[in-house]
Image (cartoon, rainbow, N blue to C red):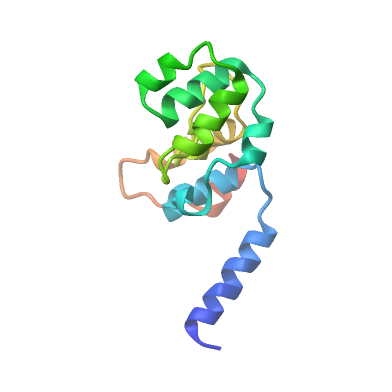
Length: 139
């Protein structure tokens, strides 16, 4: 197998064995500087999952211009979701998909943000001390 083929097999194997929704995934996204925007765009399935009007308003403000978000503040959630889906820039990602992830609303639940908070300290080392794999596991 060529080096490229070996890397594809390794990448696939690693992806299949990672426990999704875990701190290790957030650590790897940070270490590997993964940009998920090339693999994702807000689609109908994403919009179907949005229920909280506060979250929809926050996502709209983030995905389109602030002026447009203000003008649509009283529109239906359906109209706002359609604007997110159709008007978001190609590289837009909700806060929880960014590296590192963030919360859409302060204090709101966010699995990726919760996981990131468990491992973020591993990336704040200011001296040349190496991080051992068990340190990530313990987080």
